Image 1: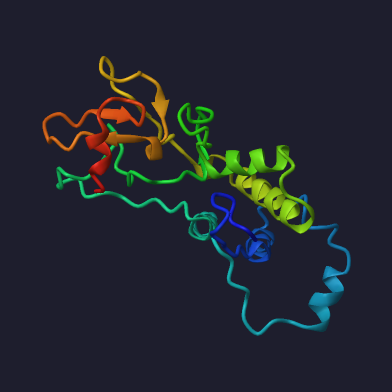
Image 2: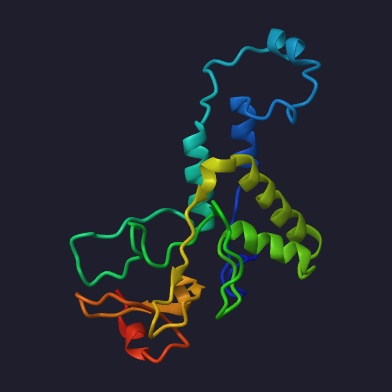
Length: 199
């Protein structure tokens, strides 16, 4: 499947694994079928070992791992690391799904989370056939995980009075390298030195 975020990156999502794990856990009993023939199958063959079922936490970790939305904490003791106020996640963290989606970034028009990005791809009809079906299945899986897959948004406010005051994505803003200041400014502000800080 072509990775949604960049036209040059690819990822392989084993959606069948995830669905099998959900079915094994009985988390979506409505999708599992009618159950006809299950008693016949159980009489004919009994498995040597019970099937290992993944927990919901393991399923969420699996989805985060294959979509590149794993939560990576920063070193709070390092004053040079870029950080958002009250947030311990890495600066360039990508959400699987936001608690409250702030909408597209006002600077680059990018989406706030993977779910919104996938929904945009479905609505603008840029995908066809199998790719479109995979994106729709990904959206269904993210929505099935529900509040367990949600994170606080990663947008930061471009600090007034020198900044514009808009909330922008991490790719479009930087942090002042001065340890005392740590002001956040967007790309259209007049402080380009903030983007030289790669930490």
